[in-house]
Image (cartoon, rainbow, N blue to C red; front, top):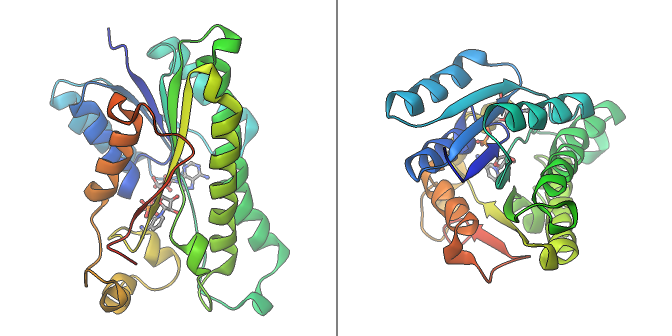
Length: 249
Ligand code: NAP
């Protein structure tokens, strides 16, 4: 029976998938959630179980309160009491200026990136907090360097949602620090994943990488390394931290 049980939202692709595989290699029982791409989620689960690990995948839209409740109840039943949460699921939409954004787009971005992270953290805190009879735990939120750069002409809405994640991380960290829960964020720079295609520019990392002091994009694995460190006992005195994984950008 694994004692470390992790939920990784959006764990079927990109940074979430790399985090799931690393967590499994470190002995966590893993639950990944996904939205549309069941085949990708099943492939992550198969890779973990083929290596002798424990993993399940649950379809759950983080923007849907009933889906999030069901996600954590499934983990309770299938794996046990969650000890770690990675609020990784995040979206952006096609690059455009603020003056062209409509309310529907803004609602979708905020619902997934912000409301989704709050709902998942709520379910995790109810299971981890000493106030609720829990044994503690750790949460890592996926922010972005966009929170401080603003993403002008691309997706200021996305950047603003990540600014909200920074404030959420600092506030929740203080709220639950005395209850055995640490809350931190990683702020990736430009990482090679499919998310840039969602913005209409699959080759975005190649275009912007020369503006990165290290002159390259990052790999999902490099972000996963930081996430797993923040979740581990090696980071036992670290909470409310915003850790940039961005090649100096
Ligand atoms: P990605 O490759 O586009 O993967 C997104 C993942 O999230 C997929 O597994 C997707 O599942 C899932 N997802 C999307 N909407 C969801 C929802 N409503 N409910 C549940 N799952 C949902 O993204 P990524 O690049 O790995 O990004 C992961 C996180 O890092 C995001 O929060 C992103 O903002 C942040 N980040 C990324 C970069 C970068 O350069 N890549 C930089 C800074 C921050 P399906 O496959 O089923 O749709």
